[in-house]
Length: 459
Image (cartoon, rainbow, N blue to C red):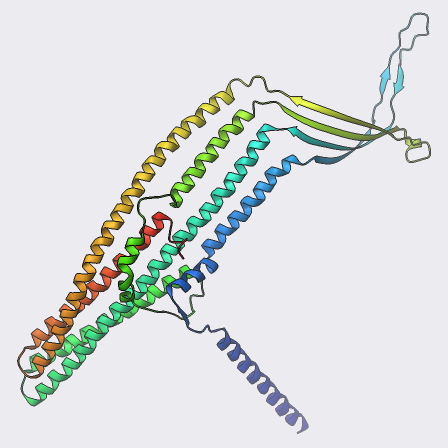
């Protein structure tokens, strides 16, 4: 009986412990669920620039190149090394003497010691090293290039995040247009149903209205999926948890009031901030520095060397005893190296680099013309988008009025349901076209700012 009570008590304690653990686990799980993050465009860009793995990789590359530069400049410091060696004489050398007037010595005399111990310290310091100086300048240019590459990554990320943000706004605004049309279809279907029940319309007209309302629901679901996919893309670019709920603020029409001012502020006459051209110029400087390095390798080099060695040569019976004698030797020297002839290899290398420089100049000219073409193209697209926005806005307003009028006319029997359907379709097309025009304007503007290199500087 007592054992049964003990088991009951143990079972109650165990169940209580499991309940507490489950509650704690649920609390921790709820605590890990992120709250909804409400972001504007500037906030989304700030988060992306601080959390995106792409930017972190670019920053790590700058850090790596800085260490590489320090590695190059370390060549100006002395090189110090320790050495040690032990040698055992397995068969000693013999010296033969054949001196007139002295006894013959056919077996010779064994010379040398059983053991040889050596230890030393050596140091070298470059005094005149033209090739090393040029290499340091090259490492500085590599650092500049890595910094510009990092800026290019940020410009590209700003472009992608901006377009993803605009994509969400377009998806949301398009959803609102389709949702409003769906609500109107449902309301119209209910009106037709009431008229059918009253006997004022045929069953065919009621069925057609019901089918149209149900078909409109499919468009609403597709629009919701578009919003979800656009939001996931933005979260990926921002570098945040994919399960974090985010909500973007604003709508496409918010940008309409500043469009003309923004376009007027864009300076398309210069490409001085274009990151592709800057990287190209830095690569050209690196090639020029490589030419200097190759030329400097033919110049004399001067170095200072110092070494100190301690040595001992003893037989086995004297090793590590009082009779074990050590002696030291040290030297200080200055070495001059003058390259004279290497088969003309350096001369041919210089010619190769000069040809590459000529190629770089031609490629840069071609790149600059291509960028200018893109700038002109984006500006033309922006101008066309501005005209389309104005026209589509008026068309949307007119389509909205027509839809409202057709609904009222149908209610009083002055229009057919086909007129109502046509007005709803016209409203959807006008609304989607209006949103698409604004998105095209914003997308072209973002691409133009990317080419001009201003998107990162302005955000």
